[in-house]
Amino acid sequence: MSANLAGRTRVRRRARSGAAVVACAGLLVTGPATDAGAQAPASRSVLASAPADIVGSDAHVLVIERTPASTTAEQLVASLGGVVKKQQPERGGFEARLPPGTLVTVRASPSVVAVERLERDAVTGPSGCLATDPACYDALPSTAIWQQAIGLDQVPGRARGRGVTVAVLDTGVTPSPDLGDRLLARVDLTAEHDGIDRFGHGTHLIGLVAGDGTQSLERFTGAAEDADIVSVKVAGWDGATDVSTVIAGLHWVVANRARYGIRVVNLSFGTDALAPTGRDPLDAAVEQAWRAGIVVVTSAGNAGAGSTITKPGDDPFVITVGAADSAGTALTTDDVVAPFSSRGPTADGAAKPDLVAPGVALVGLRAPGSTIDAFRPAARIGADYFRGAGTSQASAIVAGVVARMIGANPALTPDQVKGVLLATTDGTLAGPDGGGAGMVDAAAAVALATSGAALPVSDPGVTPSGGTGPLDRARGTHPVYADVDGDGVPALLAGEVDALGRPWSATEVTQAWTPTSWAASPWAAVTAEIAGAGPAPAWTGPRLSQLTWEPDYFGAGGWLDAGWDGKYWGGKYWGGKYWGTGMWQ
Image (cartoon, rainbow, N blue to C red; front, top):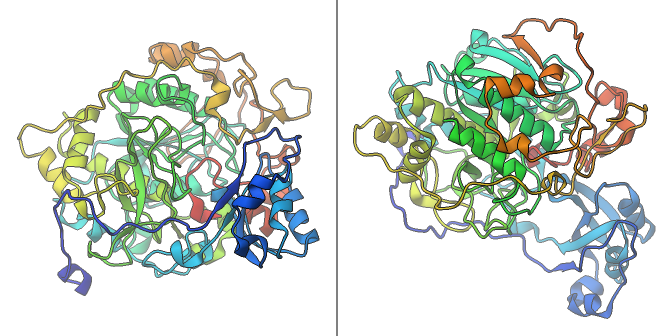
């Protein structure tokens, strides 16, 4: 028994903890949002609201850029004698030093949304890393101690997710011996049509859900080593996707749930849209899966303090997971909410996330040659594994815990799963500062789920989403480019048009999702389904348009073809726009 395990304490209290992380301090100097082409005046009110130490002295700031992003703001900072220090894509901008008297000029630029004063000592967790410093997280020791931190080592061996399939909507998967024949299918709704992960995010998360550690002599395993996996790929090499593609992926999952035994879906994806959940089509889509008996687990986002929960994590039905920093130990007394983890309230005023799970220095599977792999060599662990941090990873862990619960008690409903998870958390981090009900406790959750006692049921007490709101509002501020009209020129995908170039209709999310509805969907003709880890046959069906963050990337098959360099990777072009993994950048 390790020293960490021997000293482990499992505190079971639901009281709110005082161990919350202090939010990034300083003044947010901002004004009303303007159109991209409009000049925001340097008003006296902005100047008057800025402390003298920002206006009159060298300032360490976060410059939040208007989207679609360009290099304009960086060039402005440099022209004023400032220094661009570090990209912070998960916050939508970059870190800089501004000379005295230049803040108002930067804020007035039409390429800038806001300028925020940064205080480094206010955004570090117990691991000692600045919230937006991925190089620091990459350098943390490789460990599997998170399994002990959530009691996974105390779950009976028979409850490892056998017979339960987890669908992971993400960037695809690179087949691995750690998955073996438990990788049942690769489904691809992108122009690549092969299910292979060229970005690197999906593979990493699938390893955290269900890797069995074959290549590490079982040192690095996922949360449910016996669970089956279906990978549903909705984004290509640069992580770009559209809300309509994600909705279509959810449609496929619901329509094929009986065929593959799908009981859980992990969706580490989020947009910054603010539409009410009662009308939002993406919220309506995850609720379709929930009503069909599939537990939906989603990430909270990586934007830190403030009302920053991303969609569909704002939905009251689904299980929204924040990230905890467990300081590399199995103790609960030194845990804090990770400084990058998003927190509520949501735009609807709801308290989210629902709970937290470890989200720092987690070892999952590596996708060699992928975009993430190429630009984060320090995160590699040998030839087969990769280290990452973010709410995506925390979500994947909870998805694996849910698979264990359902494997132990197949009769569980989604409402019961959520009720049991929230009733059995270790309450040390519970509270409104990003901890939700507290840290997930796998052993307690499985024990209650199989106890035979009356089980708690989550009851959000709200009307299900009608999904009748505009698709374009569900996209948030990070739309993608596509050539949906086939003229060879990519254009911004905007308005009430889906990624196929078809007019959007609310019936896409209001109709019942069945095998018949999927077969009748235009998405069926462009979706590839590859069995297991085998090679993908040559695609002979209709061709989808490639989705990209920038029109310059159109036609590129990977980061090398696109001419990416360290600046673009560290910057806004991936930028955590969707995938809830701020620590990759």
